[in-house]
View 1 (cartoon, rainbow, N blue to C red):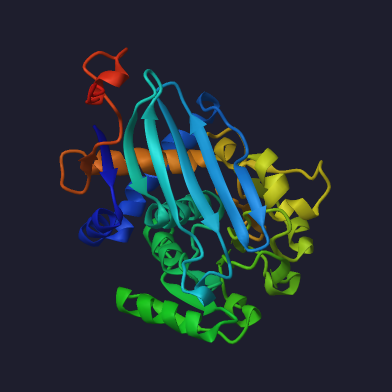
View 2: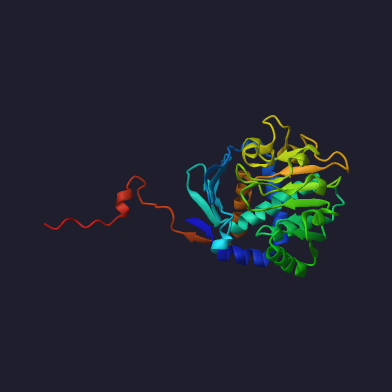
Length: 342
């Protein structure tokens, strides 16, 4: 039987464990998988772009498991009563192809994105970073803030969103968590004293929600909103301020901030920094940029982690997904066919 973690199960699990303990453990899984990057089969996601949004499949595998995620991104959805992003994922055994774990991934994606951002900041931001600027206060924002506190130690959050209601929502959710939270009137105000800046906006357009003038020396930037061609969040001049780190260059050059740059624009793969094969930050005043578009290995990690967490608990339940006839060659035998009446 395939184990299934549905929305209610995931919500119960996260509510009982807490976001920060989960993120802390998930970062360990992510680091394990990033450090064995070469063991994975890798390819850019398979995407279908429409005027209203994108629908994507994100596959990867190692020698033991195959994983994929189905995910959408439709910026106009909230105005129509739908979420911008929904997702589900599957983890299967490579040796026989059977899916062993299936999960909702709307919530799990928020957790894995926050954990990946925090992992990158932990490797690239200044160790004394305490102030986070959130540019974009949608469904990812609270997860991002709590992950940064868990991994990096930030204690202050400055929020800016052109949708004032969204910014107030984020502040309302974070203040009871013990963070110092302020809603800023502009991106420049949010970034004025920031050590880490995270941009996470939904519009599928070439934008500069963060300008070069907004970025002070020593800042680490997580640009995590990029997920399709023709969408950017940063003033291209920012990319020239310091080293740019990415997940999988063939995908990032299509979908990330660096799509605005020439094909030979230099980048460093984050797994190399985490493995000690490439330098990260080399100076306290350096500006570092993580141009993150989300990659399938991160989904692999969170599916592996969620399966391990759910095993032996009531956070997952068996579902009758795979036909298993007594004789593997007799699928027809599962069906009770009435003989024709003469």
